[in-house]
Image (cartoon, rainbow, N blue to C red):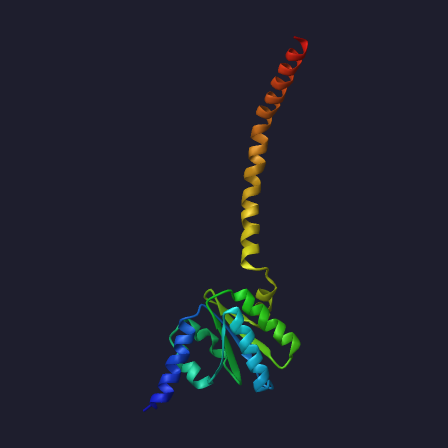
Length: 174
């Protein structure tokens, strides 16, 4: 029979996974408590919780969930950054911290129903912010409409200029 405190920890881990849409797994072997605390606080500022996971409890917690595909990465020392906010900001923070401190290694991630390996997490970190991507999409959608408007309004504009010049010529002649 499972001990109540372990069941409670497992349910807490399960809730962390289920209540967040994005998870990044890291290997923190070799990091000091101070370094982990610094990483945890910098991720907290970006809207993520960074938790050290117990492998057995985590494997039990994610069993029969969408996150079960992460099981193959839950080996050795594992910590997870959980967020429902800006995934790119969290990925950038993790990659930047790993660049400063090579002891931190990215293992995997889970985002939008897909498992990401370490290289994919690094790719997510290189993407521009969401607002910039949306602005680019809107700009590319707006550009053809403005071009069409310009082409279609060209003859009317030329007619208006021609009529204006005829009116000016007649007013100067009179």
